[in-house]
Length: 279
Length: 111
Image 1 (tube, each protein chain N blue to C red):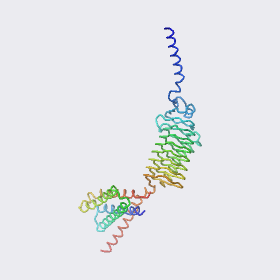
Image 2: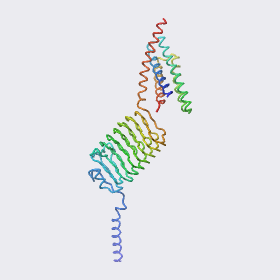
Image 3: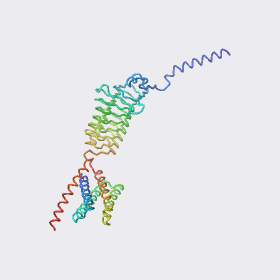
Image 4: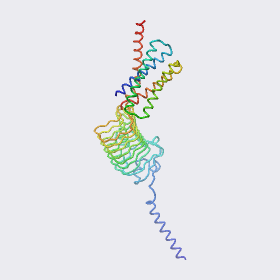
């Protein structure tokens, strides 16, 4: 009886040890909180293992973040209260470099003469609810594929969202409005899908395709730009249900009312003269 | 492009007719009445031209229905004026017609 009890105790001890050793491997990814676990976003990125989640609390973080592993990085309370400003304005505020997968949500990114969010050489990256402002390019997707970018806002930059040498990405419900040059810029980008985005009130073009082929542009709006959708050296692009109205046309009714009033008074004067002559 | 130019002229005529109508509320001179009618009927003529071109390009039931609705508004305005109720209701209908022409012009701008 005593031996059996001892055997049972040993078995439970060994089993517990095994479970304890395996626990880190079988449990979910770790969560790192900024600033309680790591003081900076970059610090959290360095401390994290691939697949970990980083949750960033409200505040302004002055740094350049370089992400080279697939992580889920989220703000706690959205982009209005979680701001990352470039420490070195010559670099992107956040650069996702050579990553497969990963998510990035809910930040304001500003102050870079390069880009707010720069996704480079990556695939399957998801980014949403980003507000990129005061950068050269708000969001810059370069040599990347299979990404999903949704509900981001890139306004007050030189260019809003730039997609270069990239393919098979999806851009949905983004706003590339009020930029100093262009809203969406696709350069040598193929088979991307732009759907239900807005590219309004940019100084030059709403949506520009240069040497970009087989992209789908569906239900986007490009209002109040100098030019709406501009395509150059681009073939086999599918355009469907996009709404375009150039800035000039918004002034047209005002001009027509003005001309109408002038013509009315001229007409009146002529008729007055005619009727006076008749009498 | 033709339809845009026609829309622009029609819109200007609508504005001119609207102004004439407002002046007629204060004082009805013979020449004012003539101007208002001339501008008004020319506006309707342009409306019909644009409608014909538009319907020939896209003969959908919804498009035709909208054009008929616009024409009915024009007709109603003329009817009200003929009934002698222009002073009371003409201004509202005149403004409605201007809005109609705003829609006409914005839907016929080249993209």
